Each structure stands twice: as structure tokens, then as C-alpha cells.
Amino acid sequence: MSTERPPQRDDTLAGLKYGLLLGGAVLALALPPAGVQQAAVAASVPTTASPAVGIASAAPRVIRRADLAGQEASDGVRRVADWVLDSGDHEGLYFVVLDKRNAKVFLFRPDGSLLAATPVLLGSAPGDHTVAGVGGKPIHAVLPEERTTPAGRFVAQAGRNTTPEDVVWVDYAAAVSMHRVRATDPRERRLERLASPSVEDNRISYGCINLPVAFFENALWPVFQHSRGIVYVLPEDLPLQQVFAGWYDPGEREVALR
Amino acid sequence: MKASTTLTSLVAAASLVGAIGLAYAQTTGGTTQTPQQAQMGAVDGTPNNNSNMNNATTQTPQTMPAQTQASPDMNTQQPLPPQADRN
Image 1: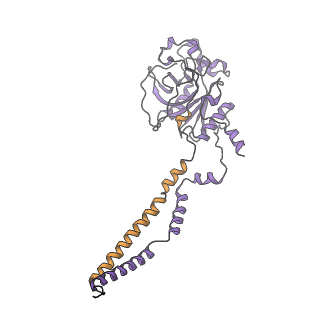
Image 2 (image 1 turned 120 degrees about the vertical axis):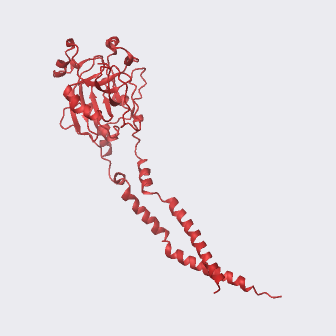
Image 3 (image 1 turned 45 degrees about the vertical axis):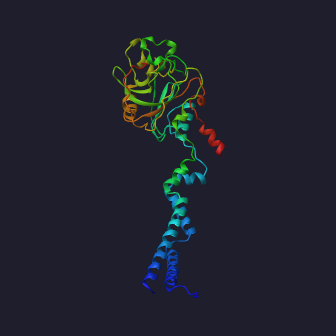
């Protein structure tokens, strides 16, 4: 009995051997070592990722602050504006900070620099709340104690009232808007109140925020007629953290980071 | 070398190259983030500034304003119907 393998099988085995050797040689030449490949990938990531990410891990975090451009402002305005900018709560939009205690509005650009500021008229009733259902009442039916300008964070947008007049809706459901000062009732002396240096006489409206005509037309309306913005109405009674969830004092955080 | 041997060699070589190349590609591709993925992962580590989280959460009955919710497309305006304001 013969133990020799057939010639055809020998040829096949030889072919397989040659093929495997040839394939191994091709792979050795074509594929780079795994370590080199990983290093190349790792090196490419930081060049395309956000530079801030890399910086944040290496350097202490810097608190971003709003620029009031020398404008006189209360501590509350500064702390809220700084928080807005530092936290990015305004989502890259223009934002307004309304200081009810001092009856003054500050309009900021998205980068936190002040665009304009002005005295305003506010709701005659003290308080940071909105009385339920007041937005649906006819103006003559709104009781004196219901005439509050509510505190809070609002996404404001341009619109019209039924006059029709261009307004910026702050709280549409509660019918609170920012609009040009209205001197329709001479007994209210709204223009005089707005012009006076006193803030005690600036509480006269039914809840809306009355602005000087020039401020509305030259600063506020050009910003809001094409885009929404965020309005922060500072409380007059409540603490900031109760009105603005997530609020923190950037100044205190900066001290803590040192 | 016979023609059948050469053919067998080529088939074996191609099979080996294909199999190992595919395995290698899957290994490196499955563990490597694209630059975009890497950036998104880094952003995920930052505080969530979603405006929905910044709305007032005061529990005072009917007193705090019903705050407007920010929508993802908040920079595009849907017109609001005219209504009377509070002057």
C-alpha cells in the first residue's frame, strides 16, 4: 500500500502555503502598527475639538462678567447679569434685566456688553407674583392689588396688542409687555413720572413695563423685532435664587475658585 | 508551478488579506471617536444650561409667574395673536 499523497493535493497545499506567505507579506507592508495608529488618532482629536475644552481642563475657570459700561446699576443687576453671562442662561440671545426696585431696565448684547439702559414705569402694586387669571381680564376690571409686574425669567418676543401697537411680550399669558410709554390718561402723568429722578413715582401701570419712546424704537424694538430675547425681572421681595432656579453668585464662586 | 497552484496561492493570499484587514478595520474603527464625537463627548461634561432648568420653581401658590418655556428653536418666532396688554 502506497503512503504517498497524490500530486494534485501537494500542489494545493503548496499553493496555500505560498498564498499565506504572500498575504502575510502584504499585510505586514500595508498595515501600520496598532500603537502608531492610535497615537495618530489621539493627536488628531484636540485639533478639531473645542479649544475651550482643552483649556478648561488645564487652567482655572474664569468667571465671565457682564460689561455695564460704567452705567450705574444696583448690586442685584450686576449679580444677575454676571450670572446670566457666566452660566450662558441667555442662550446666546440679547437679554434684558429689569430692576424693579430702582425702576430701571438694562438691555445687554449676547456677549454681555450693555447696549442701553433707561428708567421705566412699572405695575402700581408691589409684589413679585401674578394674580391668577389677571391676563384675561379687561383692563378696567384689574383691581389695584392685581397690578403687579411679575418677577422671573421670561422668553420675550415681539408682537402686537389689540390697538394694534408694536409691543414686546414679556409674559403673554399674563398680558405683560414692554411698550412705549402711554400718556393716554393725563391724570396719570406718566411722562412726568418717567422723567423725574425719583423712583417712587414710577409705579403707575397695570403691570406692563413702560419705556421711553426713543429707547423702545431705537434700542429694544430693533433687537426684538427679528429675534426673541430673555427678560429677567428682578424680584423686589423674594430672594434671587427663589426666582431664578440655578442662580449663583459669580463673585462668590470666583472667590471659592481662588 | 502549475496554474492551479498559482490560483490557489492568489485565493489564499486574498482571503488572508481580506479577513485580517476587515478585522483590523473593525477593531480600530470601533474604538476611535471621530473628531465630532470627541467634541460632543466633551460638551456633555459641561453643566446643562437648558433654559427649562432655569425657570422659577417657587412653590408659592399662584404667585410666581408662569414662566415661558424656551423651545429649541427659540430664535425663530411664531407670531402671537394680538391681545390687550396691561397698559
